[in-house]
Structures are given as structure tokens and as C-alpha cells.
Image (cartoon, rainbow, N blue to C red; front, side):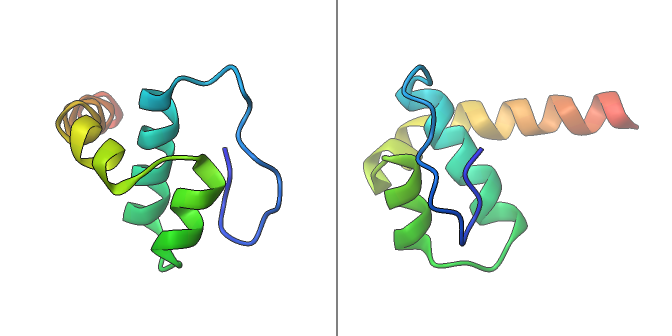
Length: 67
């Protein structure tokens, strides 16, 4: 996972969907530069929109499992 302030790009084996999910988690959990998170994870605003619903469902399942 690439967090704000780190220079390491995401692993090339990650799919665009997984990189978008990572970016969505980072943006949801920290106050950071959105453009930098998109750049570090090699995704676009369109990618975030495309994968938002699946990320939101996954996020809900994780929260349910933790409860």
C-alpha cells in the first residue's frame, strides 16, 4: 500500500481496481493531497468513481466482520 509521503509506487501486479481501492481507503482514512494519492496509486478520478460502489460494499463487509 502506498501512503501519503512515501515515494514507493504500487506493485505492478495490482489491478487498477485494487489500486483504486487502496486510494479510496487512504483518502477515507487520512487528510492528504488527493492528487498525490491518485498519482502514487496510478489511478484517476474516473477509476475512483468506477470502483467506488465495490469498495463501499467491501468496506461494509469488513466493518461487519470486525463487529
